[in-house]
Length: 599
Image (cartoon, rainbow, N blue to C red; front, side, top):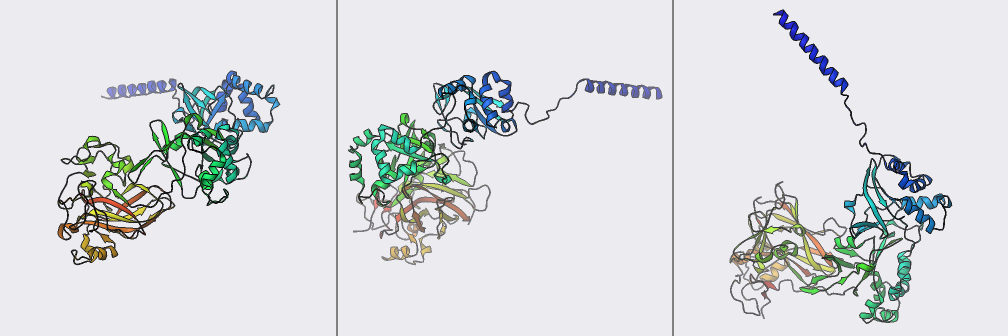
């Protein structure tokens, strides 16, 4: 027995010795740093046959040190051929003929303190400015990336331990002219250039490097019309432009229409075409005036919108003469004349179930009276952004677009947006953000129109949440309330509408006795009973400071019962605050049929 144990022990010792030998002979290699790749400076040194001249400039500019340390950088590295060509074109013989200051500026214009791979290149600016403090512009021509429309990237995404190198075939040079000088120096813009000077905006768009200026005004975007575009609009000269717009005779006066016209063509910040296409609006230097923007195919359009039910064609930006970089921003050219549109305030009756964002993708299924249309695969989240509802199919889900007609709780235009919203359930939506139609600047009373549900949530209404102009409206919308909550005991009383209005309630669906030009008789509600279940509730008054599409947030703040599809939303009405008529028109299940005060 002992013999067998000794043999076993010797066997184990032998196996242990073998394992130790194997481990010792096969040394384990562990990474001693977060990245085994050389840093940017090391890469240039290892490829001196290609980058020795730029490496010399880096050393003179004292930039090789930080590009040799850990960090996050992107370097656009000119090849030796590119550097030699730049030296020759500058009238120099070698880098020794340049001052250290010149080389510092050059080098810093080629470095971005961020890792910017080619996947982040678009037809627009690189989002992070260079160490020089100005932006680089990228585009693609014939499948090749370009920087500032002049240097081609010959090798992309050279990964280093502290960033990325892109090899370029031409030295990048910062722009030499301000926006004012670019406009003045182009004969295409002689009329607009004169208007710049007459209104004082030439000084606004003029900038010299080193000048002290606030960060908010360091970069600007200017959109101008060429002389030919203005000529086509009947403006043959600056004198004609002044005669048309300068109603005070003093273009420097900020109330003068010519001053406002030029101000409307300028906005703070640097926005290339790609930036403009992704925005919904440019806030201009004309007080409280915006230029709405959109991308249609490859066309970038300004002020192209449906306003008060009427389509207004916009102005298209001329790609061939846009994205012109200046010291202090970027210049674009418009193919059409555009100006501030003076519009009167009008009531806006917003049918939520026909929101353009919500209807995107509905196609032929829209208003199918036999089915409900549902936003499919919506994530459980704290909010629903209508602009992101771009996949809508016929299925079963929580967020429902109803198109069926009913006699009890009928809905304006035959549709209703039914939602599952709760304040106290993590699996329910807490609020929805709704993009409004265009609202002309001014004050509006905001009426939330809903179909009463005894188990519906209580909603708080906020205008433009998260923005400086955010306004939380004072009146809570109790979706469980009918019109009787107004305190009016007899809803059939001839004076009931005025009494309800005084308490912030109103009927919004057609009732008996209302006038309809087409003599529609079916589906009209009585003034009591079921007719009390469609409620218009005044949430409060908003002050719209810019003519634009804005955001209304409806947030659940208390739950009667937290169930599925208990929030029945129909319309939001924006009626000018000084409009004496807040009760009419009234709506019907048949789309487009309006009812007015009895004659």
